[in-house]
Amino acid sequence: FLIYLDNAATTPMSSAAISAMTQVMQETYGNPSSIHGHGRQAGKLLREARQELANILGTKPQRIFFTSGGTESNNTAIIGYCLRHQNRGKHIITTAIEHHAVLEPIQYLVENFGFEVTILKPENHEITAEQVKKALRQDTILVSTMFANNETGTLLPIAEIGEVLKNHPAVYHVDAVQAIGKLEIHPEELGIDFLSASAHKFHGPRGIGFLYAASTDLHGGDQEQKKRAGTENLPAIIGMVAALKNDIEHLKTNFEKVQQLKDTFLNEIAEIDYYLNQGKDQLPYVLNIGFPGQRNDLLLLRLDLEGISISTGSACTAGVVQVSHVLQALYGENSPRLHESVRVSISPQNTEQEMITLAKILKNIIGG
Ligand code: PLP
Image (cartoon, rainbow, N blue to C red; front, side, top):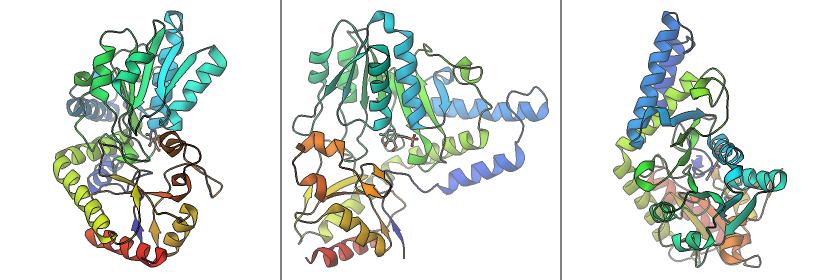
């Protein structure tokens, strides 16, 4: 048997996405920019896909830009907006628990264009709107926070931060890569100006995502309202929209199922010693858990030998697990949690039996 519980890294594609893509690849191969019949047919599908996505987000299709995924969406929003508006101010606010795809473009602006960044540290596992309010300056032009953390599943207070920013000219960018498809998200109601998403995290294909942008104040090419040049990847776009539509249609049942799977697992390991690395407001999809005295890298290897794929949640370079900057920010550099914690990330495609098997093997390894 093989058990996949690393869904925060990437998800298996849904059959809804695979069949929608297959149909487009077989039937609609024209270039959406061509003016002949094949092109017009592809152009129509592209317009419909953008409209469907706009409906899901409660916005207008002109506000959606297709990208290659979360990394590109984050880079486009952060670098595109800040370079264009640097004459208004050069201060950015973000958090210490962001993904590298947010921290690195900000670092690029700091190192190459003289921007300053305030990096908010979580207090008792939480980032608050109050912290953002206190950090705001007259020259702050961008606030960037994630919707849900990819290592812990903790939710950030997006609506509250959006509310704080209503009275300030800084724009709000939200990396929603781990939340889209799991919660209903309407950026306009939440006071979000830019929102990043990636299809492979919600059962769609790799290499495609989108950026919601309330303003078109970015730089770019010819397609995508002159913001991103290049022939549109129509099969991937159609696959992404089909995947998201399918997730949204089953939002509540998926959420409940994943919650149930998480509870089953925790019940099954009740007799062994563990702790959870989690906040008050949590998505059930990600479970960050530590076992006192157990090295996480060895645990991953032993589970891998049993055919079970989980992760530590932090980056892995050349097979070596790096210490998580997220857990470091949450618990300090010297916390044993950094070397004991693993991430089990669940999808509605997982089963009760898989959770029971994982628990059983873990108990064998740990000797509970
Ligand atoms: N942001 C978050 C929170 C993520 O979890 C990831 C993926 O690991 C990304 C951004 C990057 O997304 P992509 O793989 O589509 O570039």
